[in-house]
Length: 305
Image 1 (cartoon, rainbow, N blue to C red):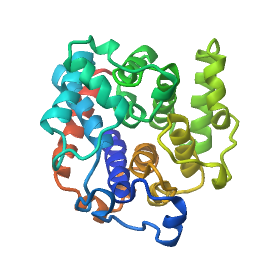
Image 2 (cartoon, helix red, strand yellow; image 1 turned 90 degrees about the vertical axis):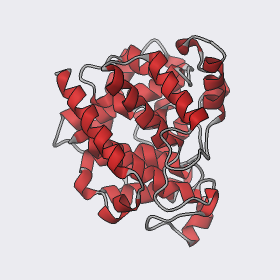
Image 3 (cartoon, rainbow, N blue to C red; image 1 turned 30 degrees about the vertical axis):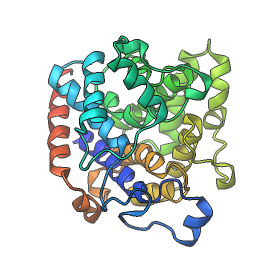
Image 4 (cartoon, rainbow, N blue to C red; image 1 turned 60 degrees about the vertical axis):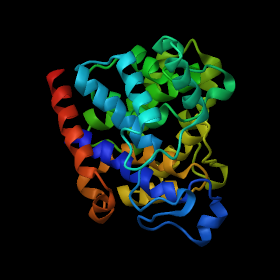
């Protein structure tokens, strides 16, 4: 079940990174994460997911409920997560500033597609971290992907990043046998062609397009959407299994949960659910509910065929 592969891959990466979010890379070099740990940055138990997973499953739950992409319903689910702490295992402990403002806009009556922030400094990774469910919908169009990003992150750069990520995931879903490099190149070629009139924005993706991400000293695993994407590509290209990919993502430091979540979603699809360490999965409270949602979501996506 490919939905399970990707979503549980994302969740596990997220949970691995939560205890050491904001830690510097040099610190993690001396004390690297090698297994599922707990407490640390947020003092939460091992296997606790963050806003990355919460907003991902909130998106999925809306699409399952409505049997369609409904922007208002997705925002309603985000607000349930934000205000009523639904889609969390424990009380909410993390939310990005851009997301926070966008959801407040919606609560104040702003139309869903006008809530997102579109300034240069609003290009955090808060929409990229939750966009993976769109990859499983057959023939999903770029406008819809962009709109799902724009619910919170409306700048063109964030929108393009989400489309590129979905294209990489779709290549993995549809083209078995290709290497990681080939999947990334296939997606990049599509993006460069489709967004050719946005040269100023495409320049920000140049290192991904040009395969210029092999020196770890040039990788910055901070919350800026481009840095996050570069970190994810670096980790995927320099490992050959799920476990090593997400651990490398966590041990880059800084925005550890989101880098590992976004990396874990693609690594989960590429390597499969059975390659995710079972002891990590068994650590996660309420994992059965997420697996059930994955099954319902996959059934719905099959109906689109």
